[in-house]
Image (cartoon, rainbow, N blue to C red; front, side, top):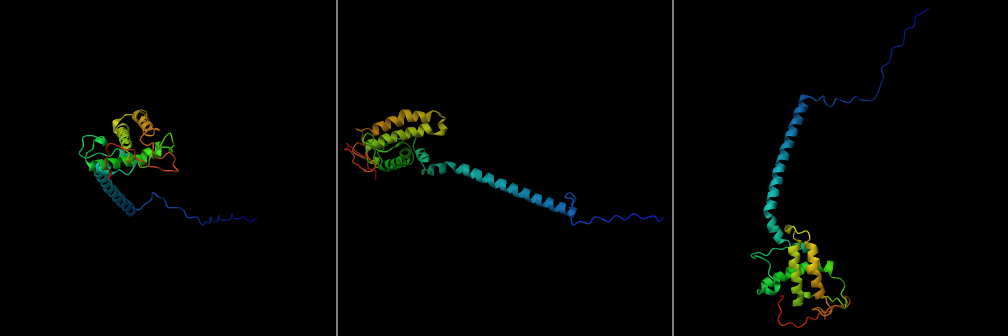
Length: 209
């Protein structure tokens, strides 16, 4: 009986490629990686120095930037008056230029804060005037509540009840008197569809030009 020789095992053929060991890097590759890492660290250090310089420059320029910002209602209300120890009531400003500047700031605050938020549609019992600055009593009362708003809503004052106090003690009484049926705006608009403006005679008025 003839002994049969077992068949020889054939190697398994495949198209798969064994991935290289990621840790098996040549000394040349490691040196290149170290050089790149050192370069990135240097760039990060330079960027950090530049960022610190930008922050310092921004901090030093902050007061000037804040003084120049008066386009929105809040910055207009908190605009500082250079060369003044404190606010001056608008009726006490004898200098025409100072009066015009103060009135301009007040107009910005009324236009961007007061009117959109608190002035509803005019009615016979609550008139309003779109040219209120031509009524001395109107701009005097509005200037008063604006000064109070600046004082009571400034974050630096750390007065948490300031806004509530401002509404109760200043805004509500002032608007009630200003928009009363027998108030200074009685001859002005009582219906938004029919705008009217008739300044009441005053003993003396300030020039707005």
